[in-house]
Image (cartoon, rainbow, N blue to C red; front, top):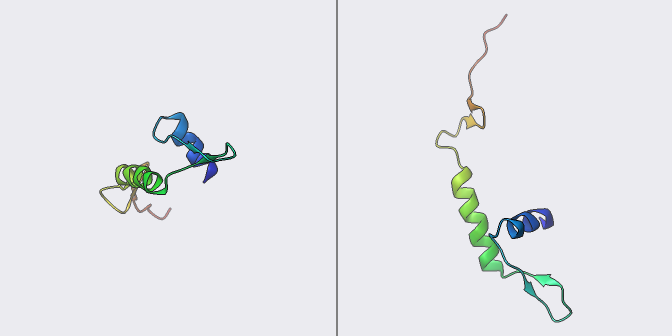
Length: 61
């Protein structure tokens, strides 16, 4: 999860807040909103599809 937050920060999707001792902290509702926005884009229209297209059965050789 820390790597995901760093990626989102580098892409400008998320800005950290800073705690009393200077550590980065995040507003949880904002993190959830960014996660949901990304998830909505990544859900394939066909549940059987993957990044390379729909699954196809291979013929037995």
